[in-house]
Length: 318
Image (cartoon, rainbow, N blue to C red; front, side):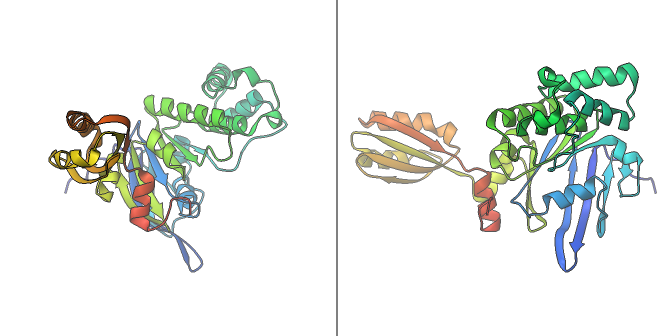
């Protein structure tokens, strides 16, 4: 029998299980990440995200299942696959009494970089993380967001095939948070595979090509944002307000294909629809033809918070 061709995925996680005593922290988790793909693990604190990535990074042994990075089996004892990944943990891993440049230079040497290549790469990473102007400042003088960005830079130095980011924006200011997200977008655009864990729905929606919803150690669902939202039924809401008789226009609104329900009184109407962006122009035109002058039109679409609630029965940050 011919052996199957090797996977083109940078990361293959197959049926991972990890127990702590009688508690199962990770229960049969499987997923893959392709080059240039950002894959999100979305779930509340304690869902099993950090335990999963600790096994992916070879920091924890799995009780069952396998991890393959760049075609090589990952375990705590293996060295070669670790060369292909960069890990940015929740807890800062920087030296406070070294400058930003000195931190990067030290970790670059630990990662095998030397000479002109090391110098050039340190300067390149300082620019990428937005710290070129603070390169000679001690890292203990950095803001929380700057320290987070330096932490990410350390993980990037050796150009890993897979970058693991574990809750990288926790506790940072909005400006630094946006800078971090922009950096992640740029890295994926250059072909790096990214595993991103978060309990911030808006980060997963902005960054991730595919998202896995994890709760109580299990993957509840996986897919693109739109694929996940379809699990809730995928209905949108259009809310209208205006002068004129919206109740009188309701019957015409109900006749529009894709409109599933209309609740209306004289001044307001709420429509439950399929694909609101495709229907909103026809809806507005219909009420205008009925003599209504609209003062407000609001479109609401389901989000990942809705999906999480639908799948688990609880809010994302519970």
